[in-house]
Amino acid sequence: MIKVENLKKSFGDNEVLKDINLSIEPQEVVVVIGPSGSGKSTLLRCINLLESITDGHILIEGTDITDKKNDINKMRQEVGMVFQHFNLFPHKTVIQNLMLAPTKVRKVSAEAARNKGIELLRKVGLEEKADAYPSSLSGGQKQRVAIARALAMEPKIMLFDEPTSALDPEVVGEVLEVMKQLAKEGMTMVVVTHEMGFAREVGDRVIFMDGGYIVEENEPKQLFESPQQERTKAFLSKVL
Amino acid sequence: MNFRFDLIAEYAPFFLQGTLLTIGLSLAGILIGTVLGLFIGLGKIVQNKLIAFPFTLYITFFRGTPLLVQIFLVHFGLVPFLFGETNAILAGIVALSLNSAAYIAEIFRAGIQSIDRGQMEAARSLGMSNVQAMRHVILPQAFKRMIPPLGNEFIVLLKDSSLLAVITAPEIMYWGRAMAGQYYKVWEPYLTAAFIYLILTISLTFVLNRLERRLKTD
Image (cartoon, rainbow over the protein chains, first blue to last red):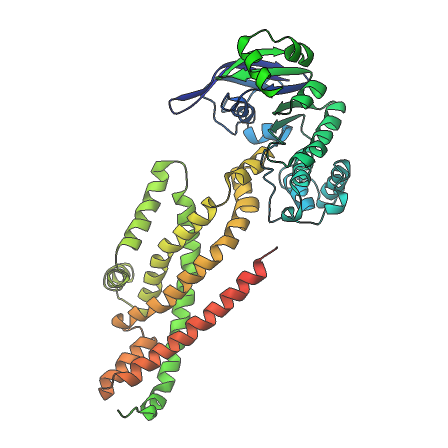
């Protein structure tokens, strides 16, 4: 579903991704872990072309998104993204946040978009907040709205960039619960996170990144219980 | 000192005409300047340096030279060159518009760039084009932040329109100078002019404050 080939990304002289090769199957939940500065967020942002790519290729369902001839906007419609800082549109109500892209990009009628939006809000447990503005929501609620907003475009893949890192500890659970539900429904997901419990429980595969490389990848049980690489061991000993 | 209210009364109809023209000149300058300013501001933030350059140059010139010099350039240079003869009111509108466009462009640019980068990223990640994201996500938020600095610019423009007296556009200050010349008086004409400007700027401030409060969502 996603194929990353020899991906390299530099910011000026700073090479953040050195040579990334990765393949993600449909319905797979891949969790990316690693120390800060390891390039995991950059990798995720590259998959959505929020960062330009220095070298290499990224194929989504066989389409090379690094090829300038392909329409990025079209591709992004299929790939939902959830950000650490939510990035809800503060001048729009919750339901308007969910309706904006479907009506403007997919040209869905306002009524259909609203119905779909309400249904998604129900799914994340926030139906009663439809007409509230984002500023009146808690962090956990904001992130659940952000997930619903991404889902409103009916993406085939969902990317999560540290979705719980900006949250108060007591609301992390409600966001992870929504993500778990999504995984259970068969959504293809790539999740950058520091939540090792989530990685172990929900992930089909865990990728450990350090220094711009994928150091090790394996099923969660193997990776957490018997890591092969020294760097993985050192990292896990600190966070577990 | 013998303050001659009767002279002010005599000149009142002229000051009234002048006030109407000042309001007209300022409104025209604000409207044209805002439209021009939006384009110039958007032009300046284009990634491509080559496209952005002329807009940067425009802003540098009009912010870096005195308005009075620009008024002379337009009145004695640009307008005669384009139309064969000059016209003080037309030259006044052109000069005020070109000048305020440079300041308004910077207000637009600052407003747009003050919006968190995540807003653009979120919009783009939902599949919106750059133009759609600007129109539905960035500009509506930026406009709200631009109202206070735009209000300041409008007030500055209103006051600066008094410079047009020197090219004989018959606005408030023009009639003040005429009255001063006719009666060799200083306080009566210029205090009257100052008073009218003060009424205008206070009214404008009041309107802008109300607008700002109404546009607040939370």
